[in-house]
Length: 355
Image 1 (cartoon, rainbow, N blue to C red):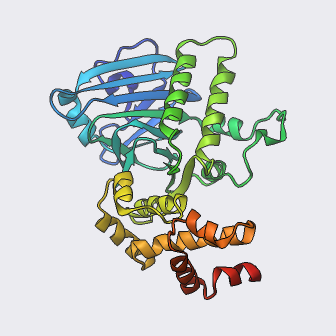
Image 2: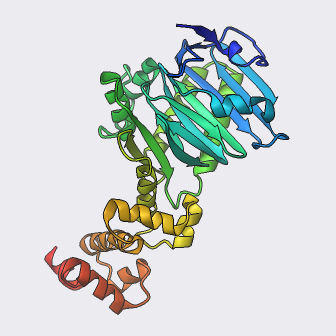
Image 3: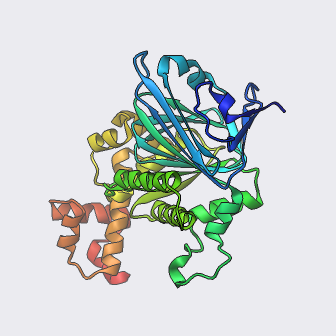
């Protein structure tokens, strides 16, 4: 296999030490293969836009040193729009800090706006395509580091030091380690009411970079602590929705999942305009996606989440039914009763009495 170091990856990289990345078969039509010689690496990329007046910044930092370059985008356009897909021997978490990026995974295009994240395993060929002003953060993890973070050898001080046994991120990593040929990745989409997702991701980025640039006593533990904080937040349902996406699913399945997340967060009471703004697609197109996967109109699919929430409130609280109907966005009590009976075959009062 043909091998290149990161500094041959681009001629204007400022080199401090030997690169932590080796790239094999960079010119192969089957894609390049990256190998990482350190347990952890952070890469920050910024693209100011896609015109001849724009530029591209790249910074990578690891135990091996820090590398950076700035280039006019016009000089890098061909490479970043035509480079082959690549895969690697490490796990990669892509975090979109600003703008939007098109993530090509095994020749399927997925849109990632600011605040979303994508966790790639070791078996997926992929490539990021810039479509405007964008800032991306990549966190690369060796298998050994992730096993240490999720299965520490030292007994924890507190019972809650470990993530829950059914934590989706931990299961994803464990499954890939034991069955490394799976074509699957994790999508992280912020909760509708989590307006602090982007500031949080920026804060984590700044703190990790500070530790990497100014290592001191305890830096290793600080970085591991920040990573654990990030993992806990990404798998907290009140902050992000984590969804496992299999590559044998349709390319628009991810969009359907995000529609479902937004409807779940709002109990189905979100307008077409709000969905359009959140997902950057027309309401008509979103409606067609929902119809494709559920057979329902978008409004009717949204009402399934509304009724689900109503059932939960009727079973688990003593709130009166008028209060529940108002909480779910109904200004007309009769309309709520009629819809509930239509979907459940009984009135809210009868449902509460039965369950």
